[in-house]
Image (cartoon, rainbow, N blue to C red):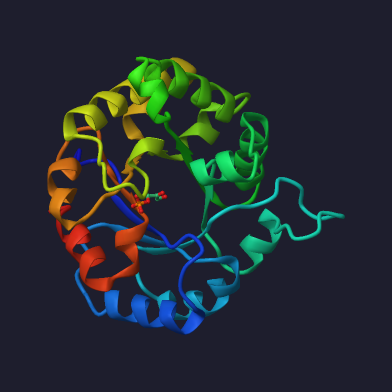
Length: 253
Ligand code: 13P
């Protein structure tokens, strides 16, 4: 991790835990008084207000939603808008997760609209992208990520891009136990920074955090987090156990 960029360890609980279990988990994690970096908790929508109570008044701890709709309100049964999320005290939103792209049909255009909706409120998007296994095997990973970045960042101003948190999540590494090697991850993060610089400026590209996600666990966290262009982790499975999550947080130092 570079010393002058924001460092973030984010917990994406996906569709796991009850409210009670989630509160217990957060309270346990926050017994740690000296946090070495920013922490983000992204529980299911139904848990947000209760988890908010557990993290209130803690410096460096943020609440995220796992998705949003791009319209502020309207006839969109089952959807949640950025206006509603902001109203609840949510500070960030995961956008473009591969599970949303693959299982729920989120397109590049929608992802761009969701990012814009977040930025038009006071919400930082955590913009996820990453290639599938066959795309890496066919050496198309850079092209794939370039396309996803171009779609997601389409028509954003420099100032808006500056507010985006990026997350490289190779699909073949998510929930599979197959982590990208530090070399593979660092190479892609460097590429992403270069792409961001060509879409905005060098200064913006150097300052935005780029997280890595995909089977991050205590055993591999330190090596990944010490790569110069990796500024943190977006953690799925290992974020559901306080001991594992804290071990990843401690690997930042
Ligand atoms: P795992 O850590 O379970 O591989 O999930 C990663 C992820 O999808 C975080 O958004």
